[in-house]
Length: 236
Image 1 (spheres, rainbow, N blue to C red):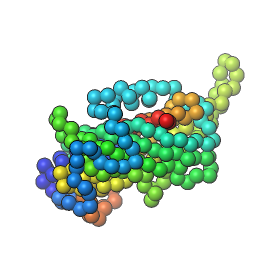
Image 2: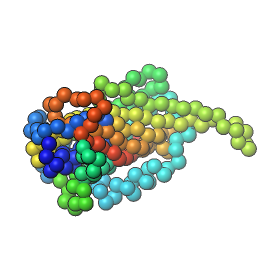
Image 3: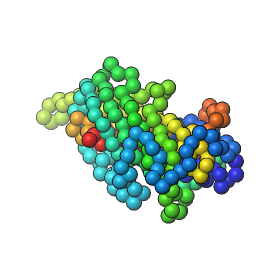
Image 4: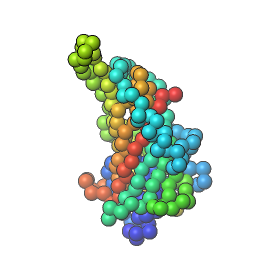
């Protein structure tokens, strides 16, 4: 693939957060053309931008980590993700921001996949650029890969006696097609991190993965492009 095509597709995929992929030859397969309104999907709003993402991520991730993680968790968790997209040579091709909306229905020991929803309203820029372009498509929770919420209980010895701390973490694989300027890529992104706030009211962590041209056979462990960034969500 020409470098310009890799850069364009890299911008498309930076908004996802990921795992798995190869960016092959130019492809027009399957996706809608990028429009000014952004891609459709499970989340909306678009209030988080490149300018304010970091302050919002810091606000959530600097909250006190959850110490009273419940055994049942239900609700809609809404936030955003931001990532850098790398080309096949390891160079940064651009950056991306997207909305994240996850519905959680989890009971400890009883729910194999507690998540639905995903990421949408992708917007991207080329590296060093100021023009923000909308990217069509969305990423949804991948039912073929394991999703999990884990509750960890630890007993600590303090001056006031023993205290039990119940922390929580989550892993959410996302997959889908993203299209920019007539090029479509299959992207996989893995959201992973810990819960924050009382009762697990928020979560934040890393968003990492990769991408490949739509319709090409995946080569295990070989990626033509990478996605690397962070995400946060809060219960509504």
